[in-house]
Structure formats: structure tokens, C-alpha cells
Image 1 (cartoon, rainbow, N blue to C red):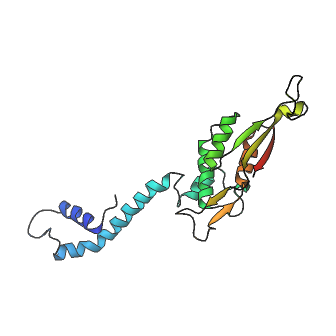
Image 2: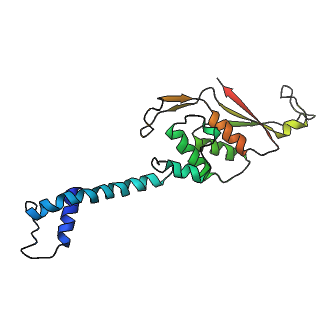
Length: 194
């Protein structure tokens, strides 16, 4: 809750000594003299309230650069002009990243960035596999494929920076982030479904 001039004035007047020289009414010279000073307290309370919201990376605006610097961002993954929502998502995904190499881990990591994906795993050809499956050598044991929609559209949201585009298309952030965290011995491919 953000308090107004009158709230601070009333609280301040309650702290004044009692007596005829310390009138507590709202229409006195004392209250009119104190009223301009209350703008400072109102501004400080408003800034404190905004700090509570800004402290969380998913809603940060003023502390965005602080969050980015502590996580080694911005990096080339976000591109030249990422939206505020993309920057926030990248911060949240880096903070919540616990590491892993399972399919569910990569799907949840992509979800933290704002993408819905599926993953296809491959295996080398073996005797007894059904006809029609992908044919490949032993290297296919280390290949995996991220399947995603043809275009991921990131719409502008309330609180984004002035001058940002109304929508952005593309998955470069996801590709770069997954390439950064994938197991080193694996080959990662991307499949854009239509």
C-alpha cells in the first residue's frame, strides 16, 4: 500500500507533543507548513514499494542491469535488441537453472525462457528394429533434436521498454542457450515444425 500526503501528515502530527502550540487539525498553519515536507515521505514510500517489485527478476525494470551483470548477461544469445520480457526470461532461466541432461530438464529450461518444445532422441540402427526408422551409425547415440513451432512470437507486454517492437519472431535465444548448456559430447539439432 502506498500512503498519501495526508496519511503521512496524520502520522507525523501524532508524533508531535501535545498542547495548544501543537494543533493537530488539517486546516491549521502547522499542518499547511508540514504538508510540503510529506511529499518526500510519499516519494520514499513509493520508491520502497517499487523496490519490492523490482527485486524479483521476473518483474524487474530498474534493477535489470544489476541482475544481468551478476549473471554474465547480456550475452550474444539475446541478440542485438532483446525485449524486456526476453531479458527477464533469460535472467529467470539462469537463476532457476539447476543443471541436468534429461529430456524433462531441457523442456523445463525452454519453458522458463518462454518456449514450448519437444525433444526427439536418436539411436543407432540395430538388428531387430522396425523397418522405416531412421538409419544411422553409432554417432546417433549422441544426437538429439529440439522440435518447436515454425515461428515463436513474443508479444509486447505492459512494462516493456518504450520503443520496443509490438512483436518479435524467432528462437535465437533458445538455440543459443541450449547450445550453451547441452552436454559437450552431444550433437544438437533444431527442427521447426510447420
